[in-house]
Image (cartoon, rainbow, N blue to C red; front, side, top):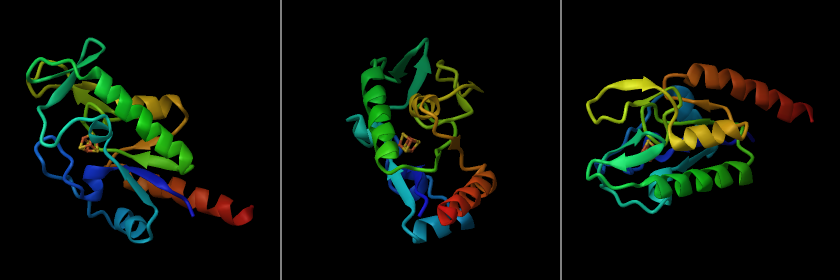
Length: 158
Ligand code: SF4
């Protein structure tokens, strides 16, 4: 059975910086969830950060929060743990929350805390990608489902 690594906040856990979630009700996502195929991870929580927590952005290769604290190490630790979990579960791919400094795979905030977004990857999305794990976002579920179907066929043939 294929496994999929997902952002805990998309799964419905209240791990967002403000203590809420981004629960995703997409039908494919819900089917995978009901079958127990989703593995929720929150890299920022696994990195040791509290919830709620100040917002962070990637700025010049570091991760800085709104208090001006350097939280790069916590972000890196969370990313490594997410990668370990992905590998241990042999996940087929990941679906991570867009725009997050950890989970974003296409866009992140520009580091000025002004709401501007630029092309780029969050710390965890980058580490997973560098290790050959395909990362989708919540808008790419239909595409993810194609890969899922393909992986499912491979499972049956072997
Ligand atoms: S780090 Fe990722 S999983 Fe955790 S709250 Fe942010 S977007 Fe969601």
